[in-house]
Length: 170
Image 1 (tube, rainbow, N blue to C red):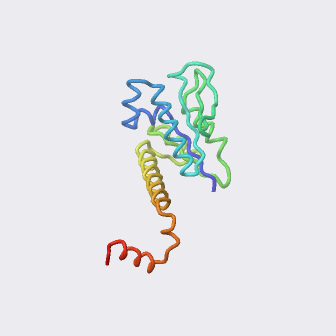
Image 2: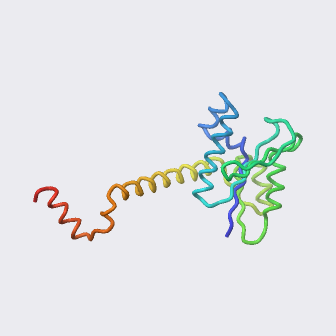
Image 3: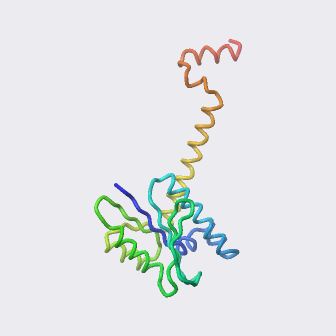
């Protein structure tokens, strides 16, 4: 089953402590950090992630970009992120697809739920991202430790025990 995650960018930035603090200093940097985090999460989770930003903060024509294999949308000038998210949900709804929308906007959660998408509050997404990052670090650590001694995987338990006794002088 194909899984899609549509993220209300500014809502998440405002809800996640790290990004909220960063936003006060530099909004562009907070956006870039969210893009990096979600690109990493997309790679790990296998979900297709769509990130939506309101034109409210970045006036202009809007647009669709791909950065780090992440689909990023900026709404048109008089279009809200909620409207674009609803349109994406309508376009993506179909057989063999689960669609999740990450936002803490209660009104938007009810609307997208009515359209068949599942809601993911900002705090829950942060938990999922944090757990995914931990899992990535664990896998990297395991892979690195395996590479430190390439022969270890090829030894039987008895041989490993014998070598350990010799190493300790027993």
